[in-house]
Amino acid sequence: MSEKFFKKLPKVELHAHINGSISEDTMATLVARKQAVDQDWRLMYRKGESDTLEGVFKMFKLIHQITDNTDAVYKVTYDVIHEFAADNVKYLELRTTPRAEPGTGMTKTAYVEAVIQAIQDCALEDIDIIVRLILAIDRRHSVSVAMETVNLAAEYRKKTEGLVVGVDFSGDPSVGDGSDFIPVFEEARRHGLKLALHLAEVPAPDETWKLLQLPPDRIGHGTCLQPEVGGTQQLVDFVTAKRIPLELCLTSNIVGRTVPDYDNHHFLFWYDRRHPCIVCTDDKGVFSTTLSNEYSVAADTFNLSRDQVWQLSLDSIDHLFSDDEVKRKLRHKWGQLKDHVFADKHVS
Ligand SMILES: CNc1ncnc2c1ncn2[C@@H]1O[C@H](COP(=O)(O)O)[C@@H](O)[C@H]1O
Ligand SMILES: [Zn+2]
Image (cartoon, rainbow, N blue to C red; front, side, top):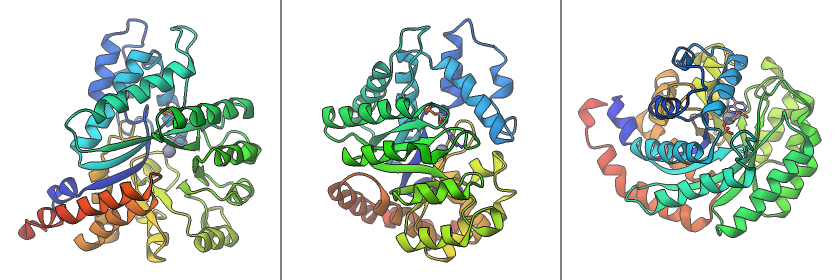
């Protein structure tokens, strides 16, 4: 299948961290604006440099040094939206952790407002993409910090008439016990926020089981649900019975080494069972990928036909956090684009 097919394919991106999605171009512009930053960042900012989850998290620290003010946060968000639009992503749920930076005076509220402003400005432009926001809770921080994030999400959900759609749970999976945050997620629910939780990114069957009882609306990764990789049959059965969609990020898991190679990625296990699988990038900047590339890798690795790839993309619409009207419009758009996407039969 040609690269052109994957690029032309209309796509839905449901798992993209804003600061992890920063492109090299944006990074270069922001570094040039700053004197204090280690100018060797380019050496680190390369795929393969961060070859473990630990390395990946070091990279986020570096990126956060560059995006420590509202102008930078605005620019990253704005650029990331344009980059996804150029890759034919028609609907995008961005997620980000509200961050205060005492050094520059940026508050969490100012951070969230900068992100929302960028999304709203893009919506006025002539680019064909719908963008929604998920606020992220970092598990390395306290439960009370998490509660603050839920309150911010609820407040801005109201103020923006639904642009903020949910809450994420992320951060270094080796830190803390995720089940401590259950009351926070229950509170988010009460505000009408959806839950997209990183679960079982590394083996953690007890924590995973407790968090599954919520249950989350979508699971990020779910790498270690199966018994062979540190999970349990009970976890697999529960996720299967509830049909909780999985956000699957192939390159992220390979570079972060939570999966040994593409052939052994858990995509196949779930896809073969006809479980809802959504192909996502996670951190397209840090992992030097695009959503088109992730679809291409999935198709190559698991021998998917063009029809299967199309269906995978179309079915993702079922699991996004916006209302049915948005879903209906997107399905209509897919219908309009299908002939165009399948036009060059000879290159398949
Ligand atoms: C690779 N797998 C992953 N596992 C867990 N959390 C991750 C992640 N990738 C990204 N993040 C979370 O997203 C933050 C960066 O974007 P924002 O500053 O929020 O926009 C990271 O600090 C981490 O908390
Ligand atoms: Zn993630």
